[in-house]
Amino acid sequence: MKFKVFGNTELRVSELGFGCARIGGIFAGGPGQAGGSFVDLIHAAYDNGINFFDTADMYSQGESESLLGKAFRGRRERVVIASKVGYVLPGRRRLIARIKPLVRPIVRTLKIKRDKLPSGMRGTVTQDFSPVYLERAVEGSLRRLRTDYIDVLQLHSPPADVIRQGSWQAALDRLKSSGKVRYYGIAVDSIEAGQAALAFPIASLQFVLNLLEPGAADALVPLARERGVAYIARECLANGLLVKDAATLDWSKYCATPAERERRVRQLDEVRARAAAQRRALPAFALDYVTSLSGVSVALVGASNEAQLTHVLAQVFDTRAA
Image (cartoon, rainbow, N blue to C red; front, side, top):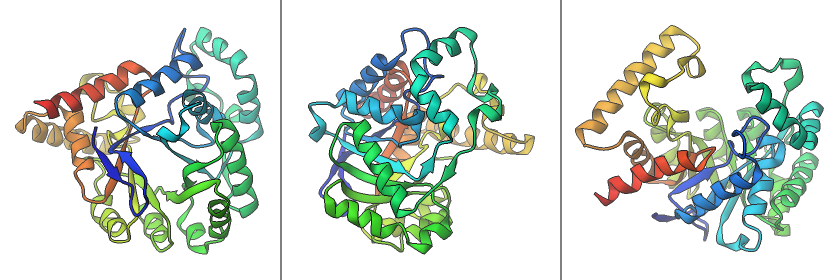
């Protein structure tokens, strides 16, 4: 594993980070895939050289943070934890979080899928970037993470106009001054929001970057590098499109229209051909594209079990060794 300096900070981070959106939750895993095995998964990522873990207070209704806190109890200083705040879960999801140990076996027995739940049961997620909410959310994250500081706190997908207003900055500065947050940044969902974020003295910027969505390579990464802002690349494997066998893909999960599917198939054919020409495994080729860009500090990979993580990392490291 290679390590990089995280922007203009003193943090040194593994070039591959572990995205924790898929750990925990009532829909995760099967029999025996409860909290213990998720902790094993986190440990496996760490044992493979990953020291950067990206989570959020809303992931699995807070369970993602709790699992990280459990996994690194007693060795907190060895890892860099980045979390996000700004989303507000509806009351019914908070209730599920409290009764999750009871609900999870029922969901598995009945084989209920997340996308099959009635929208009324899921509720509507809202956002709140007010100073009062941000400071309260950080206190909750600290409790779940079992720590007294967060290395990198990020606003979670604020719209560009909210970023430009800047009412969030004073709260994050206070959290930093208090020592509860070492650095802060913004995770964005659009290039426009990313450009707005880079007008502020943030330490990091997170946005999608992969072979199928390379727009940020020109629009955001150079500007972040110029300003000393660490760039966290997410969805580096295009949510599995750059890992999974094309014959087994469920395109309905990736494309809303036939035209979009046609475009994605064409893109995949092109990148597979490029990887084959260099005799590279596609996941390794895809991750090397991201990590080789000057200015990218860490590229996030995700997994919901050790087999998935091992499969991706084996291809990357075996290819490099060759």
